[in-house]
Image 1 (cartoon, one colour):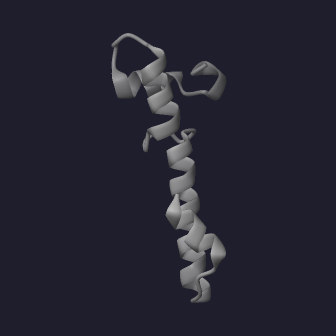
Image 2 (image 1 turned 60 degrees about the vertical axis):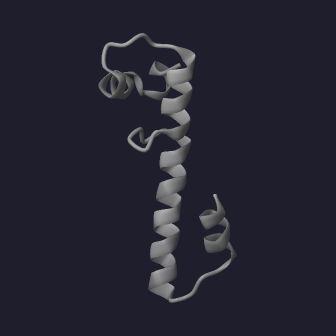
Length: 70
């Protein structure tokens, strides 16, 4: 699974030489803020760019409000 999303080396860097188990993989691929393929990382980047757009246009919209609830 980690190799299919090109995250094996990142996982090994984050967790060292500890045993690979499904709980660590799930944590890494969903909640990690250092893995660029994790769901949390992607949502955080979306939030960052939506905030920048809101600042640029000096307005907030429904997208901004929804991404902040996530």
